[in-house]
Structure formats: C-alpha cells, structure tokens
Length: 403
Ligand code: UDP
Image (cartoon, rainbow, N blue to C red; front, top):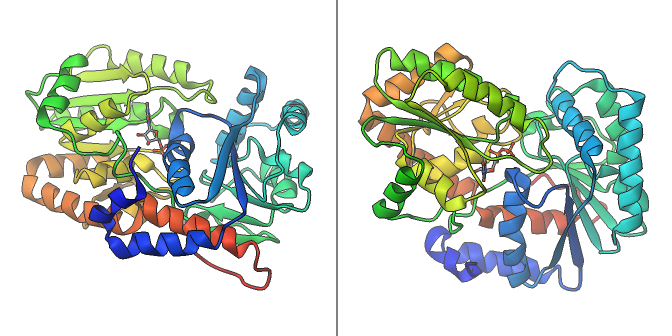
C-alpha cells in the first residue's frame, strides 16, 4: 500500500499538509464504515483504498460488512433497481425479508464507534441501534427519480441519521437532516490506476487472447442491465459498419448482485456470432482492468443509471477518450467535448465513438483534459478531505456545511 507522502508528487505538498491538519482534529474519535460487500463494485473499491490512508493520518477507522442470505440480496437488488426507477412491485414479503436480516445484523454487529458511516440501503436499518453516537448515511446510488413507495420506506430510517451524503447534486432529496455532496474518487497509486509498462499491458491482452490488430473499444462493468452491455454491443455494431474495430466487455460479479449471471448469458448470446467481440468474465484482478483500460482506443460507459461511474474517472486518469451516458455522476466527470463525449442514445454513442476513432488528435486532447479534471476533483486525497470535514461537521450542530 502507498503512504500518504507518495501522493505529494501527484497532488502537491499543500494538499497533504492540509489533510494532516484537519485529521488531527478527529483525534480520539473512532469511525466505523459499514456496507454489504467486501469485494466488487465501487463502494468496496473506495473503502479498500481509503481506510489505510485514513489510519495513516491517525484517524481510527474500521470497516465491517453486514451478512445476508440469497433472499436478502435479491430484495436489496430489487431495491437498487427500484431506486433507479425500474417498474416493479415492492411487496410486504420483501420488506419482511429486509427487516428480518436487518434485525439479525443489529444483534451481531458492534456499532459502538463514535461515528458510524453506513453505505447504501442494505445496512440502513442498523441506525435503530443508535446510542448517543453520530450516524452518517452514504447514498452511492442514483436516486434522482426513486420509486416513491420504497423511498418513503427508506426515508423513515434515513431521517434517523445525523446527515446524508450524495454523489451528485441531482440526487439530493427533501429530507429533515443535513445533506452533503461528496463525489467518490479513484486512487492513482492503486493497481487499478498506477502506470503500467507496455509489456505488462501486452501480457494481459495475450492472456485474454485479444489481438491488437484493430482499435479497441472497451466497457468495464459488472454484468448489470443498468450498465447496458447489450446497448454497447449495438453501439459497436453501428461503429463497425464504418471502422473495423474490436469490442471488449469485461467485468466480474459483485457478491451482492444475484442478477449478473443472467445478464452475462444474454450478452454471450448477443456476442456469439462475432469473434471481434470479447466478453471477458474476469476474476477480481485490478492490474488486468488497468491494462485493458490502457490498451483501449476508446472507453465507453453506456450506463442507463449510474451512482457515479468510477470507471469513467479511471479511464480519464489514463488519458483515454471516453464516451459515456449523460446520467448520474458522469456529467460531473465529463464536460461534453472538453473532457470526453456525453451521449443519450445508442446512435449518439456510436456517432461519438466513430468521431474519436477517426480523429486521434481530438481524442488525445479530450483524454488529456479529462486527466487534469480528475487530478483536480476525483482523486482519493480530495475524497479523504471531504470525509474528514463531514465527520467534523457532525460535532457542530449550528453549522450547515455544503461540501
Ligand atoms: N470493477 C472491477 N471489476 C469488474 C467490474 C468493475 O474491479 O469486473 C471496478 C471498476 O473498475 C470500478 C468499480 O468496480 O472501480 C465499479 O464502480 P462504478 O462506480 O463504475 O460502478 P458500480 O459497480 O459501483 O455500479
């Protein structure tokens, strides 16, 4: 793991000095993060990187994961889809399953830290255990247009927290508690984002048997409908009529996502006629993801909904031209035609990809601008600063901070 000092060469000395200064103010406070999976997806990714750095700054931080069975994770997946606007029925049985696993976790988890930081809806009911300490709820999903029945149900719990944190302005809701806007981040020194040699990149491509004879278009994502992998195949097919290229769809599954296998089967079905489409079901391997991103000519992220879309910042940090949907946190990362291209449809995405493949200089400039934007806004050091400030603000009742 890198040391906090290692970030000086990337963000400058003063950023690190400021972190030490504010971290000092949290002395004596114990912080506990709680989420529902230790691997897979953006939340686990961030916690894995951030907690060691917080500890190095002498912030006493722990991370625990709730337990749940298949039924529970089917319900929470349904919640996820309903929050993202999918039409579905929330049943009394769903609520019962959700609450009973919640109760079991309440019994089994030690939540006595000074600050309990709960990520996403899965562990939300733990707040019933609140006992004089501070509770913060972190929403990583796009709740710009949530299912109202589910939102009202969750709201009863959210409002028992001291404050809620959202990733993008369009997700904020009418709540009786304070709300903070804090975007997630990537770690430039992690295996997923650090520099790689061209030999390392080639080895990974060989490993997955992807030839380097044609431009590569890549989407890295869990196999999830909201990432629209079938739409990406349509985009590729439209582009392919004009520019010969390959498509990589790469991703693994998260342990809290039961729908992945089915989506993967549909993707394999749609891709099976074309040997220039590479569907890679990957084990969790950050260097491999890094290498695939670096080997790509264009990165695509055609999500239908997106909490933030870490893969976009990951690609931009590698100075790659990105075509991504104008949803969720993506427009915070991409300014259209400056640091990437935003799209709203399959045709729009195909037009954008074609344009980038045909104009390498333009593509290069977008990637370069994107990298500087990520340096200034979406690196882990900025994220740590925002979290420390949010923790501190919990002890200041009068002060409403908009980070
Ligand atoms: N990711 C990964 N393996 C995969 C697919 C994705 O490690 O098979 C990573 C990806 O590089 C990114 C994170 O998981 O760091 C996904 O975060 P994002 O915000 O893009 O989407 P989420 O999965 O949280 O909806």
